[in-house]
Amino acid sequence: MVVGLLLGAVIVASFYGWARLAATGGISGGEYAELNLQAMGAFDLDQIKARNEDIPSQWRAMDGKKVALIGQTWSPDTAGHAHNFELCYSIANCCFSGPPQIQHFVFASVPADEPGADITYGDTIILKGILHVGVQNDPETGAVLSVYRFDASHIARVY
Image 1 (cartoon, rainbow, N blue to C red):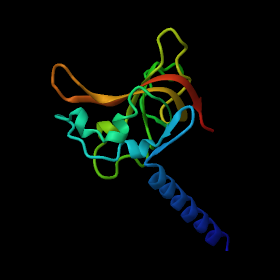
Image 2: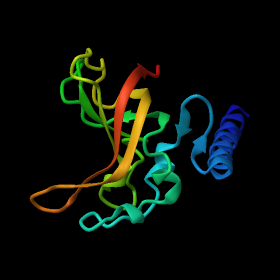
Image 3: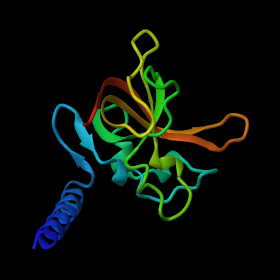
């Protein structure tokens, strides 16, 4: 009976998450628009020749906006005092369909004159600040370096 209840709870939670994503398109309101990191990366993008027009319009419209993201840290530059790090929706579940894609990551930064974020690899965090959306290319190779960049003003671990 307990197993049945647990299984039912998992099914209800999964359906709720899917329904919320379907209803909001991955964006919900408030002072900080709450964006769904999984939805933000759920599109095909040429990893070498991408253009801004290849990013779905709902994400391009978030450029320069105050947003909140919840995800896992991928690669803090310094454990415990990170000024630059990557965020993805889930390290364990990110990329079942192949290698990670650049649109699956948000490249976040904390201003140099502020204390670095107290985070380590794999921490689940809430991140608030300004989102920048647009293809950024490597000047030497032309390859896509990023799609999403983030100026963090608030970082908190989710426990």
